[in-house]
Amino acid sequence: MHPALSVIFFTTASGAGYGLLAVLGLYALIGRLPQDLGFGLSAMLVALGLVTAGLLSSTFHLGHPERAWRAVSQWKTSWLSREGVMALASYVPALAFGLAWCFPALAPLPLAPLGALAAAFAMGTVYTTAMIYRSLKPIHQWHNRHVVPGYLILALMSGAVLLLALAAVFRQPLPFLAPLCGVLLAAGLTAKWLYWSFVAASVGPAGPASAVGLPGATVRSIEWPHTERNYVLKEMGFQLARKHAKRVRAVAVWAGFVLPAVMVETVILLPEGLAALLAVPAALLMAAGLVAERWLFFAEARHTVTLYYGAASA
Amino acid sequence: MTSLPQATGKKLGLVIDLDTCVGCQACVTNCKEWNTGGHMAPLTDLNAYAAGADGVWFNRVHTYEISDHPACGAAPARTLHFPRSCLHCETPACVTVCPTGASYKRAADGIVLVNEDLCIGCKLCSWACPYGAREFDVVEGVMKKCTLCVDRIYNENLAEEDRVPACVLTCPTGARHFGDLGDPESDVSQLVAARGGVDLMPELGYAPTNKYLPPRPRRDTAAAVPEAEAELSPAPGGFLGWVDRLLSR
Picture 1 (cartoon, rainbow over the protein chains, first blue to last red):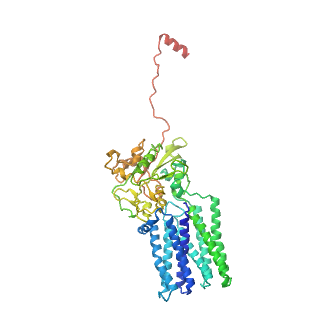
Picture 2 (tube, rainbow over the protein chains, first blue to last red):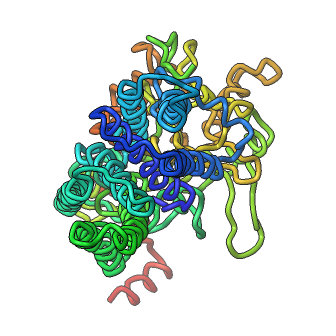
């Protein structure tokens, strides 16, 4: 599948934003969220800023962005529509939570339940995003049980590492955050390793013979219907050389998980004043690694229509 | 709107005979000709006369070499021409994934259509179609697809015999058939039953309405024809007889 930059940016940025909201909500739930206006405003701005920038970016690949509002109407059947509904709905608990946290005098609202609600809506939205891909039967690399856990864990993981960087900059104490980041980075790498093993070891149920309705036959494409690449091939016939996939995967593993994990755990050893020097680069490195991971998620996905153009499997 | 109808009154669709299709592209051409002025008009072309030519087509004909199939007989392989277009599935995920309600399946006849005024051009429906039937129009910014010539089959301005999809009307070998596949007594249903018509990629569960007739098993010998009578059975006499005997010696 064609790796469109707008969708890669949307899923990674909004994933990190929702993950950050979710981790903040969990700290509010256990009553360990530090009351600091600068930290609170910055964290909420980063979280909602990432979410909003991601949502806006996702409209850039539309043919008619001005009609995007129509996309919330078909929530009964469409995961994309459900994502739109959840994304809009999640602003309500997120903003209420932000108000209650940053301006407790102005908005004397119960912080713990609002945090839990904001976290639930945030992760719910990430779930709907993942289900858009999970539900597409023609793409075996998406239509499998590894996709939803991957999206959820990576969102929480990137949110936690982002929060660690923010907490270090503002020198705010958040108990157990560095160990939590380490656990989530390990979980994220495990989820992706399971996904990559699955993708390497299996192909979808349909093949070139069933594509033309002649099961059992050997089918070899000898002439395409067109001499140049058409929409179908440009959108769904993206081909990635194996050596490039290996390199991008190495970038995703090292920048997205391994190095950030080492840096995040080293933060524990550093005095408070120096933590930001390691936590901020760790978050930036992880972001780059996750962009590589998401690019691969699209580039390695193969659509059944390629069976008509000579692919042996999809 | 993107909820599928419980049942459709008719199941209009195509039956495509892979035995007789010769890959002439006439259906492709007439489809483009009719539909670029039809319900989903225009079928935009880009760089039509230069490198990088691209454009929207509803019907594409592939060519394959097939082997390990009864249609090959004793020969190692044979050529298969394969027209590919929307199959107007009974459970079309292209419809249910649509976030705006632009994609829909008609309850009356089962035809899958796009309302271009509602389409936001997110392309998700084209991802959801296993058969690559939907093509995005980059100029109009909306998705386009086969309409089963909805603007021909009910068109009272056309002579009754012309009220069939453009691809069916134009096929010079009679490889394309149109009718109600929901009615077991219809000509197309009878044809599918007689020839063992099949679904494409049934594993994915889209339940296509269109059916494909596999190529017939190949005969490796020609039908027996009585030996032709010798051209000059009675030997001529006289001078010609003498020449004939001389030359035949």
